[in-house]
Length: 186
Image 1 (tube, one colour):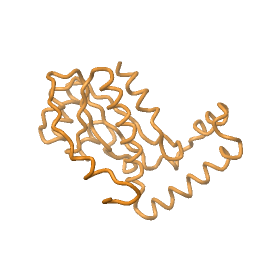
Image 2 (cartoon, helix red, strand yellow):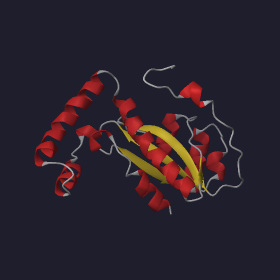
Image 3 (cartoon, one colour):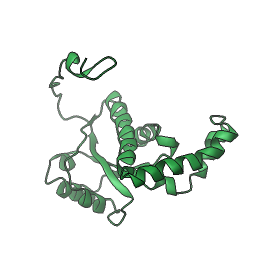
Image 4 (spheres, helix red, strand yellow):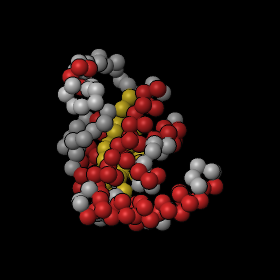
């Protein structure tokens, strides 16, 4: 089940199809303990059998992604011209992002899309998740063995397991306050 869920998450689209995100599955007592410390003692890493750490790879555009381009080309998803131009286009786009200090933000967005895919798939499978955003990034990175990598960032950590209880939905704001047509606020 865990492999199926992570495979579904990795089907999520990403900018330029660079697939610059990874998922680290943490199940060991040591790893869960480190994530508990990284979250300031929150109960989720102590209670869930699995913690997923979504890693955003802001330097993916610098790496060789020929496998991505060739797969798309060989499947007929991309024309030869498009596949040939894409590496240069992606590099120029990401160099601009880096120059404007936005490389991390864009990588985190791609990782969050994958996390959202996994959350929906887990719900459909009868599992529970709870996206966590309250943690010390340095400690999470150390817990998953990337403490020395400035090009890798923690987008989200997520407990995964069977729900211990049925929670009552807390509700959402009225649609008229959050969904607009053509312009914000209308």
